[in-house]
Structure formats: structure tokens, C-alpha cells
Length: 374
Image (cartoon, rainbow, N blue to C red; front, top):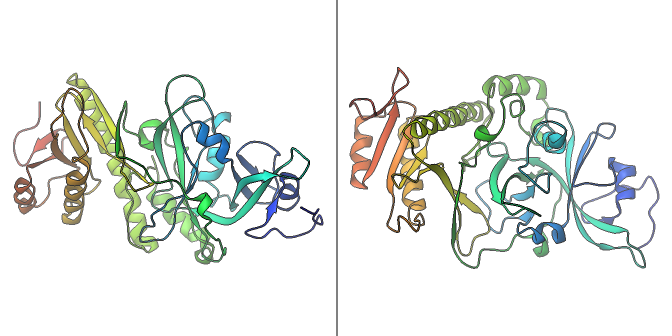
């Protein structure tokens, strides 16, 4: 590996050292997330040897969705729950806010060392942006020492003009068998993070940043308060429809919190499931599970027909995998909505033995048009 001129450009596919990266894109020289104000760059360094020891992988999902490929990157923090808050969460905040701070998100993967040296080398994958509708998810993951913890997994999309190639060595291995894990709390950002940290504009691909200032105003208005995106939407959306979706998912998070408080007031134990399906590299997760009643919930932030139908499909899918030692049979299934849906949605759900619960105008929860839940 020959030395590079100090002013040499770094292009996708190049293998470089941190010193060379620092001269071009800025870099602290250590750590997984390195933000540079001067170079307007947030550099993400993935070291497979580190993550795999802890039982998780950074890399491309083996399966694309309707918007194309996704690169998953685990946030900063090797022990304890990861966070967006305080000094510990500085790097994670830099990733989340890279677009509103007008910084470019770049990914590097450690691939080896310089000959006859301990200096690590990194392959430059290219420029990325956070997935607009599901920028990150929370997962339970092993820790270097101590119990499992909550980690942030960022969902990155390659910029359309970044010319990124996907190497098979950077693809997350598919699950060899289906596994289901019950975690203590629903793994959603709204339940773990405070409002100011997770609000603000999301990533916008470069080709759509010409009107960034006006977009910021719209997106900030739409996401004012707690920002959380627990669902992925599989169609390309305009800014207006995306903003409406942000409002819906914020309502979903708030509704989930309220209903958890309701269940806990009754003495119920609540949690969520993480599901790895054989042959897939992505991780499914449920919205809410009531362990006391062995009941699985799918929560939506709107009560429109398409929301009920989506929730019904997700429940039928997830419930196939949900069981515990105490409850080996299939769970009861319930859709939780912020308002009462159309009457024929009850008829549809009754066919599949799925209940609908909705929030009433006075803040209680009700089955259909019946009395409030006690």
C-alpha cells in the first residue's frame, strides 16, 4: 500500500488509513463516530472484529425493501444502554442530526493493516443518509460485561449519486434459525429518549436539498416533540406525505406510552419481542406485549382503513412466533388505535379473532363503542 498525496481525493472503494481520512474528511483519530465541524462530515467507522465479538453485525441487510438497500450501523457506546443524551451521546446525536447540521455522513469499514505495521486500514464505502422514515431502531444486544443493553441501530441509505458498491463481506449474515427474544421494555425511541434530542429535521438525499431551509421548517413543525419512527413505510413519499407520517408515528409513540402506563397501573408486566427469522438478516420487533394476559399489540398512530389493515397483517405475521414458557400457545391479538375506526373494520378483525381497542376523547381506552376499560 503506497502513501497518498495529502490532497488526494478519497473515492468509494479506496482503502485508506485514519490519518489519510483525517486530512480529507476530518477525524478524531479514534472512536467509531467521528464528527468534523470544519470538514462538515460525520465519519462512521465499522470494525467487524469488534461488533461480532459482542454478537452484533454492522453491514448491508441481505434483503432490500422497496426503497433499495439498507446499511445498519450500531451506535456509540460499548457498555450500558446507548443514548443520544449528554457527553456519552455526542456521536449518536451527530449521526441523527447530520442533515440539519449540513454534514455529510460517510462510512468506512476496517479491512486490515498496512504491511509491516499495526496501522489499520479502512475501505471507504461512500456517502449515506439516514432512512427518512425509520432512521434508527432500538435493539437489545450483549454487552462487554454485565447484562444485555439497549443499543441504537442506525438505518443508512446510500446517496443516489455516491456510486457505492456492496461487497459480500459487508452483508449481515442471515439467521440460521428463527429466534424469539422477549425484552423488558418496548424498544422504541420514545420510551428511552427525551423530546429535544430526537426532534428536528431528518436526512434528505442531496438531490432533494435545494430547498433545505423550507424543508427544515416543514419537518420541524411535523416532528415537534418526541421523534420516533417505529414503523417502516415501503413507498416513496413526497415531503408533504412524509410529514404526515411523522405526525402519525409520533402519535403512535405517545399512544404506546399511555397504554403502557394503563397496563402497569393494573399490575401487568409488559415488554416486546425481537424476532430473527431464518433466512433473513433483518430483525422484526413487536410494538407491545402484555405478559400477564399473553396478549400481543400492534399500535398505530392513525385509525384509517389502511392503518387497521397494516396492523392486522403485522399481528398475523408476528403472532406466529410469539410464545413463552408460561404461555406456549398463540397469544391473544389486539390492535391499539388513537380513535375509533370505521365499523366494518371490526367485522374484518373479528374474522381473524383480533380485537380493536381505541383511545376515547376523554383519554380512556375502549373496546369499540362500549364502555371504557377498567
